[in-house]
Image (cartoon, helix red, strand yellow):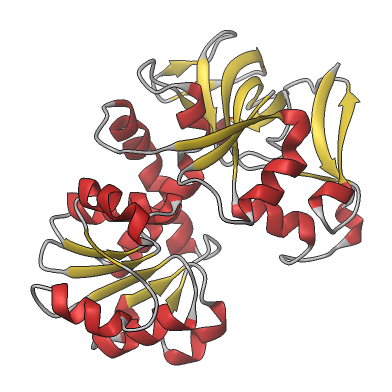
Amino acid sequence: MARKIIATAYGDPAEVLELVDEEPPRPGPGHVLVETKAIGVNPADAKIVRGTMGGDESKLPLPIGFEAAGVVAAVGDGAVLPDGPLAVGDEVIVYRASGAYADRVLADLTAVHRRPESLDVEHAAGLLLVGVTAADLIGTAGVTADDVVLVHGGSGAVGAITIQLARSAGATVIATASPRNHDHLRALGAIPIAYGDGLLDRIREVSPAPVTVALDTVGTDEAIDASLALVDNPGKIVSIAAFGRASDGIVLVNGSTPESKSLRAEAVDGLIADAAAGELVTEVAKTFPLADAATALTELETSHPRGKFVLIP
């Protein structure tokens, strides 16, 4: 039997998530069955469970989770990647998955990517959702070496990768975070500043030139107001969170548009290669047993250690 987490209703994860047993699915043409070894936990998972991203009861019981890493357990016909066929035992990353909170995940071939040996399963499982989101921010803003980029929420999982991608493009980066994370931001190549009262003045004090791009991962009015005061073109202010501020002319991305989907898809191979080579730093904050998925989601919504949460089946 296979085990998976489902939401039986929309609401508090502790009340609506359930671990159930089922027969493992069999892969058909163009699909593979992956035995998961690690599963990425993301804020979007909690939002889905709570119904804040839609409460369609016809979708219940609802599988949860978008990303995992593991081993191919079975293959359907035509299970061939660009570099050759997939075989049972191959180490892979699955993104974008459907129902990744499980010890067996049926994945479309387009969502399966080989895991390099130098990239461990826990980091691999938490890499791609935040990675492609960061790549979407960078690509949508068109960041170049001529830019001074302000990243709001630089110590978050998306923000940390955003900093690194902007630095790889040659940009100067200023990033907000609580003071306890400032050394980490410096190590990533950013100029750290604290958010809160006086943010605008602090940015102007440390910026070596006018800020030309603002990338927002937190969605606060403080972040958007500061960005609008600093960046001449609101089209160069890109957010994944400030959906209530669309009327200000900023750009909002969530992976739903053709352009956003294309940027995210094109980023996958490079993210995996850079993480495997140690050129892209990611962190795993904490691991939880699969059965404790509700606890992981609840803790993720509160103040927690820097880095990704990962479930271990």
